[in-house]
Amino acid sequence: MTQQILLASLFILFLQKWLIENTLVYKQYDQVKDILKQMNNLTTSNFYNNRKYFSNKRSFRFDLSKSQIQLNETYCNQSDTFKFYHPDIVLKDIYTTRETDDLTQEIVKSISFIKIPNYTKDKQQNKTALPEALTIPFNYYDSYLTRSNTGLSAMCLFQKHNHMRGRQQLAYKNELLNNYYQYVDKLKTMPQICSQNVTYIPKSYRLWLKDECLAFFELINTPEYQQKFQKHGPQFISKLGLEVHRGAGITMLFEKETKQLIKEYQNGQNCGQISKYVIAQKYINNPFLFKGHKIEFRIYFIIASTYPLIVYAYDSSLIRRCAMPFDKFSLEKSSHVCNTAIVKKKLEGQDLQEDQSFFIEWKLDYLQELLLQKKAIKNKKWLNDYLYPKIHNTIQHLIMSTQHYFDNDSKLSEFFGVDFMITDDLQIYVLEVNSNPQLLKTTPGRILQNTQLVNDIIEIQVAYLRSKYVRLRSLIKRILSSKSTLQKFDKEFKEAYKDKLEPEFPISSNNLFRKIIDKNLKDSKAYNDMIQTKCIL
Image (cartoon, rainbow, N blue to C red; front, side, top):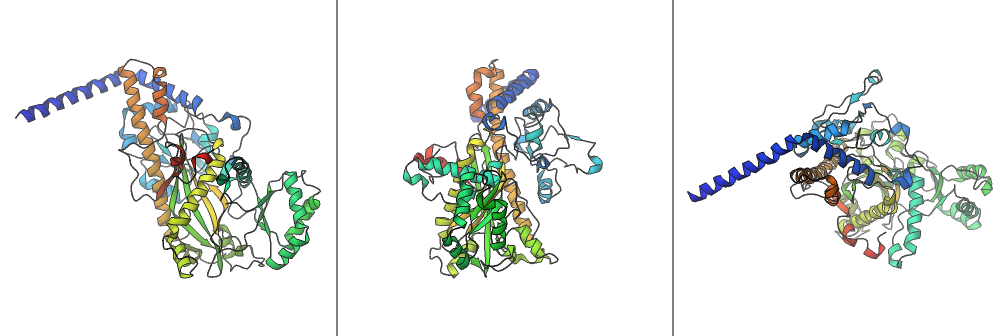
């Protein structure tokens, strides 16, 4: 009986506390709105402000900045206040958008509580206002980054976005290469161990830089180069920088193509006068072959947050084989480039969806089995002991070489696909990095895998958003109950605004993303002990 009375008393005390707290919060509606407005102002001025790079340089493609959304300068305050008083919107539901009619939209629709409008030419004059309940904008376009006022008309406190400024530093081939060489130069000033094994990009010449351009033309005019060319085929490929993907802008430097390049640059005399972003990159002519075909594999990763930096890499991979058998002397581009667009072009008129052999398998376990069968490896744990660590470490270096361009803001994230090639001696090289990679319906297997991929991404975004929401909501209540100001809680706010998972919002065990960077941790622990503390920039 005494125990029952005690439990009843505790329940009454809890109920009284809850009523007092929530009554106080509702009575202080205007104060809540004001605190949320101040928080948005703080995030805009203290976090989303990499002015060093972005103030004088616009680096977005306008065709990726389309917007049919009506942007209202009071939107964020209305949206954040609405969510503050309706926690279930954030803590239990998922409200997201997708403006492009693609597989991702189909997947998003199946898990979202927001009806996604179809933007057709007939409807362009009828812009749609952002719904207040929106929490996870999962957009194809960059419109919120380029055409909105963060913290006012979009990029609100209780939202997690799937785009970030600075992504082009990874996705543009010229920027990726610039950052790589700057990174390597910095590592050379550090202990020798720091620059070991940071060779994930083949030797390249940036032809827009006069010295490298001259060095390239000097090289290809040597007898040694000509001998190698005759004996081993093309020694270089050329690539166009900026946002050129899907196999476009890639040219094998056979005799005809080399002569064209020599003519354009007047055998080096025009070096320094042509600003076009052309890369001459060493061609890797010893690829690992599958049934006589060259293969590439794509690894997906997400920058889940930039405050602090948190990165996840996906366990599954798309392994693709080139359309034509590999022959280093072949003039067929589809013998050397395995991009889906190249395969489709070569097999035009055929039903690619029925020919799943071009998309070999999603699991890298399959690659391990091939290598074991060929006796190229003996270790049955090679995948986990060597390949995954190698891939993850390469992505870590890619991020470290570009991280200074990222805005520090826990509202931001970005989805990438990095294409790798593996050689016959089991070295891996980065071919290119794609931001916002397309998720296609090429095969039934890809549809299933892409469905899980999008769900896994959104699960991670939701977990971090819910964790931050709980911390900030608790902080607002403390400010109200103490009749204080946000300024006095400045340190607490900056800590609460950091992305980190609260125990009540774990990532599910069947999620295929694995954390490879978490700057909540100290020193080498932030990189899963794959990069030594003395080598961290």
